[in-house]
Amino acid sequence: MTTPGIPGFRRVPRTGVIYVMDRARQQGFRYDDPEWANLGQGMPETGPLPGAPPRVQRIHIDPRAQEYSPITGEHALRQKVADLYNHLYRQGKASQYTWQNVSIAGGGRVALTRLAATLGNINMGHFLPDYTAYEELLSVFKAFIPIPILLESDEGYVAPLAMLKREILGRGLRALLVSNPCNPTGQVVEGERLRHWVQMSRDYHCSLIVDEFYSHYIYTGPIHATPPKMVSAAAYVEDVNEDPVIIVDGLTKNWRYPGWRLSWTLGPQEVIRAVGSAGSFLDGGPNHPFQDVVLDLLEPEHVYLETEAIQSTFRRKRDYTLQRLRAMGIRVDVEPAGTFYVWANLAQLPPPLDDGIAFFKAGLQEKVITVPGVFFDVNPDNRRAYARYGNYCRVSFGPDMSTLQRGLDALERVIAAHR
Image (cartoon, rainbow, N blue to C red; front, side, top):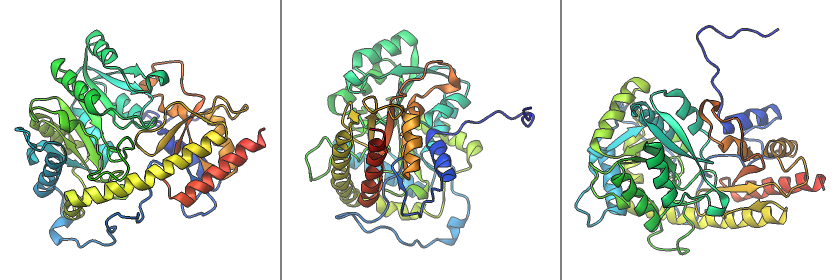
């Protein structure tokens, strides 16, 4: 006999990462347990890195910051974000971002939720595979219809421009949601390809919403380049108030302060006013006390040093992870050019480990966590019956090197036990 649900409430699904962490906790996982290795984590290591600026250890809170923040954040922080993008990507361009092009929010998902709440009755394209949290985000707001666009491994998990144009024109897309670099595949749209995407959004009046939370984790540039290579659609915008390009980023990944829950949306003033209105009823505004501290973190010299340290450390961990996984018989269709994830193809492993769910469950027995690939088959409202990526998992090299080594050793034991 089933227990009826509480009247009026729907079942709200958990994201893939939340599911795996709940299952891991049932098996005894604790964040402070040194025997466990979380290779499913969606955050980078947060401690000191060689060459990086000192980490913030304590903050002073202005008594006035105990009050609510303005919905779109403090003027000083908004202008600082605009100044940073102008410095990094728009030097010499006539059109420059100002504080009116920036809205501050309480983390990336809050910023994306504000954007989703402002979309009208449109078709919005999104890619497969992509970030697991997009699924419920694309389900809960009913004004727009999410349209999946399938990426293929033989295309490097990047959509060809001609294909995108067909999708926009054929399906009447008025917006396109993109993570760049992409979680989970680690692929990057950059250079002339990104320029063409921005031009396409301008020419076909299709808003380009770009999640750039991994835009400093770039491995396609020279090692130890000065300044380090960073990627943003902001570099190819002609008019900041006319081009339909909206960028979301924050402190979570590129500054390695995930617990601060501060993000920003950058775009035309018309969009920023709309997301501010959405924030007034959705979340009430961002964290106030930390906003003053963020100003120093957005100084270009600080950003350069932090990014150089990230790229040096995480490139080394990426190469190590790829070498270890391949030695275990795990295939990598396309090496990650960004992020701190490997999109691992398990198809050549002995059954049942060739299935991402089974691989995850077997890993728990050795105290290691991965994320099954099916969770990145973003399927709002379960409209599609056939699930892809059953033979894949996402392996994170976000943890520190000792944890990463321990986790890969555990995966090696899992595989050896089934051979």
